Length: 208
Image 1 (cartoon, rainbow, N blue to C red):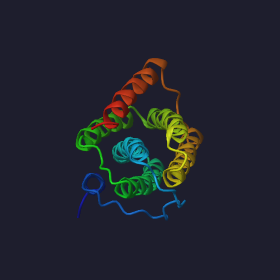
Image 2 (image 1 turned 90 degrees about the vertical axis):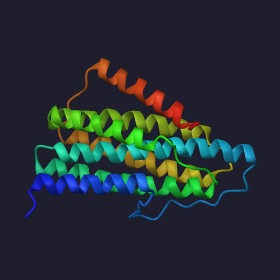
Image 3 (image 1 turned 30 degrees about the vertical axis):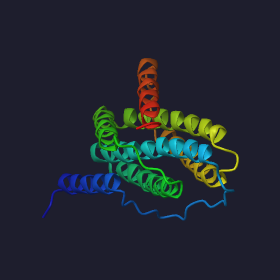
Image 4 (image 1 turned 135 degrees about the horizontal axis):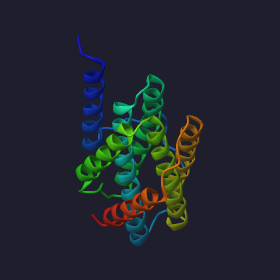
């Protein structure tokens, strides 16, 4: 019989394969909004922005899987797993939208996943309160990032806008849930470092 830790490790490995293999299956239907025909320039812009959003969801899967693996209590493991499930919806939606736009995911997704998983492990090993604080700050930054994308997406790309708007609402709820579960505020230097790392990732993923 497998130990609980081994069982959770295998689950995390399976999630990594599905995430990087492009075989994510959403539990919820993709937010739908019919877009007008986009120009070539609009499609390129939407594709680049949705590729960045897809990278964010790849990282979210890695973070939540690592934090669930290192959580000290069953309640927190369940909370992380539930959030990862909603992030799987986002992953699948952004994958599909990239295909619809005739674009591709980032070529560096394995690197993004590995880096995010390492960060999630570090946050989880610091303790549940710090791990929850990491969730709060991550989701706060992601929510701001998505708001920026809503402003930048072509007005005629209502399909991408609908997806991003739902993602933004879900991220805000994840942050609130983490706060209510007892998150600790992260030190300012760590928050700044997270912002810098996110800027490097999003700038790179926009093109590669």
